[in-house]
Image (cartoon, rainbow, N blue to C red; front, side, top):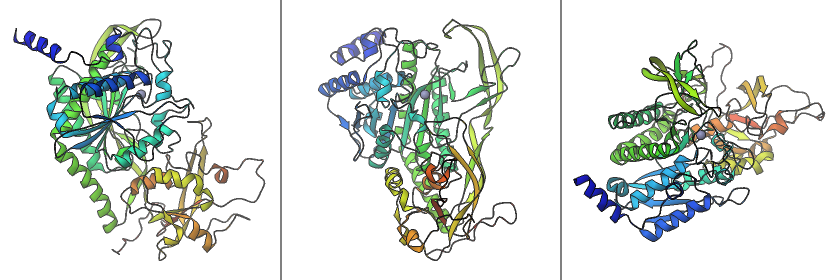
Length: 549
Ligand SMILES: [Zn+2]
């Protein structure tokens, strides 16, 4: 009786508040960019506090002119934790876009006073604005969809997967995000998705940042946050677990699952990138086979549980963030600094999984279960760095590439100096290539370049190659690594990093020379500054510790 009265009181209290598009269409449709804007405008008429947000210097629209619309809801407390929530980066995965609108409404309605008071939130519900409005009922037929509108497209209008663009930052959406990180500087970034196919028994899977080369203690804290949220949700009847897939990807009765594996340690992913800046991240993946209303509701519950955890642990979150910044600075004082060039999956624990052997309709939708098998499996939901190399004092980039490279490095928030300001006591090092792989198929429109090699004091001998003069060195861009975002600078600039500007093709004219290019060879456009690694032992030898300057 009491709950009925409360429910009635609630519905009276909340009369007049706007409904989201799925709510007012009996889930027949999902929102367009303009419908999200109309909903947010209606919320703003209903209650104070919600404001449009635009980061300083960020693009306002995509290549096709679709606006990038974000809002900020700032708590009234003194000690606010800044959190950014991103949705619809893959615009076929629409439930985050709807759930976050509900969450903002509930916060304005006063339903979560602890969150409202202690958080400073920025949200962007339709990040992939091009994909958001390109709705089509034929997209993602294996997931139960809004029947009338269908869902949007995965990629943007240029065909880029925006969730692989964080390092290269080719899209205005990514430049918007980088500007937001510089301007708003959230302690935590959340990104809301839907899974693609594994038939597990969880309502939602989630991931912390799993980033190659990030601070290990920060990554461990990031996962601890999600383990605690998972246990809380489990107690409330909502099974969740770390994002991953079974191995093999599509198990059968003959080949049942043998392991559970997460995805990728590259910082090109939105929820990996923040850790290179010493910040936390949360990936949310609602389960693709749940009904469309359930997926919205699951995402809403997960977002609220995470925000609740963050509000309750805000001092600790800030301490962990500061701690990782401090540890990076301390490493430079102690020296030498080394970072891994690659990562391999690491078994974090054994866990009990439900593997569903599905019955599907002709669209691939899950209509029933043949069996559900409970299995204890090794869970590979973290990474271990490998191929560690010494980190130089800094990199020099040929000034000829400055028109494209300088704005990109500045968009990432890096300190870039003139080459004349490099530490003169340290030698300039040249890259000696020992191997390369140009990808046989294009990725994000690029035939990517993987380079192997080492930095050495003498130039690589190549006939008629353009030499570096002292004036060229002084004119080059100099990017010191002992800066707060030094980890990020390393993975953007070391040519062996498989998320570097060299990998993403920004130096292809100098580095990839086809048969038609019969002119004299250009020089390698990146140099390192610092002690050389000795290749003599075969293993990488770390440089002598640097004395404090
Ligand atoms: Zn996705």
